[in-house]
Amino acid sequence: MPGSASGGAPGDRSTADLFSPVSVGRISEVIVEQMRILIREGKLVPGDRLPSERSLCERFGVSRVTVREALRVLEASGLVEIRVGARGGAFVTLPSSERVGEGLAELLTLAPMTASDVTEARMVFELGILPLVVERATDEDIADLRVLVEQGLSALEAGSYTMAMSAAFHVRVASSTHNPAIEMLVQSFHGPMLMSLQQAQVAAPLMGPRGAHEHFELVEAIEQRDAERAHAIMSRHLQRTAGRLAENPESGQANVGGGQ
Amino acid sequence: MPGSASGGAPGDRSTADLFSPVSVGRISEVIVEQMRILIREGKLVPGDRLPSERSLCERFGVSRVTVREALRVLEASGLVEIRVGARGGAFVTLPSSERVGEGLAELLTLAPMTASDVTEARMVFELGILPLVVERATDEDIADLRVLVEQGLSALEAGSYTMAMSAAFHVRVASSTHNPAIEMLVQSFHGPMLMSLQQAQVAAPLMGPRGAHEHFELVEAIEQRDAERAHAIMSRHLQRTAGRLAENPESGQANVGGGQ
DNA sequence: CTGAACATATTGGTTAGACCATTTCCGCTA
DNA sequence: TAGCGGAAATGGTCTAACCAATATGTTCAG
Image (cartoon, rainbow over the protein chains, first blue to last red):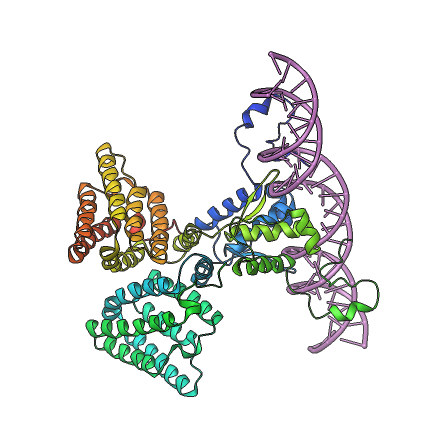
């Protein structure tokens, strides 16, 4: 029965008034919200498979198109992943920090926000967490950091040092706070940084021998639980990175992205 | 002609082979990507109106369903806003920090992350930006903050102080850095905080007279460009908030969200 | 001439039914 | 036993139509 839906299904007789106030906007949006709640409440956990589109149609009493639109939104939000074929369907996924990072990246490339702004925020955050890192870093953390530093040094010699390696180091430092919120934030910041820099084609000269050596020194300071020294090193390190950004008109002055 | 699409439009005769290698995943995804690029490159700026669904069908050579799925994704990504009715359609919007904040909020309520984690991250960040605030706050910033403080005080007397008011204050402090990246981050953090606290029904006792007075003192310190004092006040303030969170088993120990 | 009621065109929202492409699985054949 | 081939399940897409909301033009009463 096409068309009986959004008007509130006035039925035939007396019930007309009872339903009048509702008439909520989009049906697919209602479905999305319902799913979101189920996921948030743990009724649906990552890995679970939602019923097939055709089943959902029946359960919700809507057409397949509407169900599909809801699934598209959920997919775009990173809440489900969709696989085709038999035994396919919509599977609940945990939205990773990557997902959020993507959103942040998009915002950064589109919003009126300069690379300097981002760098400044980074400095505040990455300097701020250093005391926590110095206090909490485990032997394993430090070992990992050493490995990353060494990889960086050899890559530097080979001329193959990438921005991604620097990002990995800084993220690993952040994760040494053993605070997932902090780790996620640093990760989110490095993603867009990476993207915009690669777009601007300035990835190559971003890290010199000095930078690599500072990474090394930083790890030492952390190992020795020397918060002050760590702070000084990181500060110098980030400041120089910021300087390189500022030098480059493509990424320093204008928006991070290509921009309007 | 139903079904001529995803196979690569084999036409009738000889061209079949030429198109074989493509067959990219989802058509709507291609459209989304194309739109995204147009927006990123500035070919489409906020406020622009996309052609109507029916026009897009013709231009892309696909059905309306497909176009609509693409629009749903773009909408969920916060890139367009859709209005119905004549002169309606899809309008390009700048993804606001709210948009990203929502994503962050979702992540926070879903990820294995405690309220304490979030609070700690908040402390790092909000304490870290204070020097910037003290250095850069304009008269207007300070006037705004005063207003917020007064509103808070009267609300407190009336017993109607909400978490939202506290959030507004902290966000306004952050925006006094005149760095959009920082403002966005603080905003993103307060959203989920708000949500989880309201869920846990502990909104009421979260702010006492002491807290309100600390807001007042903080504004004074900022006005006097007294970074040290501002730091001390904010530190105490956040610490007590953290304490209140920890007291409450509902929101302090378990995940921020209701959780599995 | 002015203003309000009505008609119309534009546009998104939804439905039904169909067909195709991909993937899994089960049974059949060599 | 090993491999192959055909259901069956499932997402992806298409068509044609109608409904609901909105803006604009048009007409008629005052």
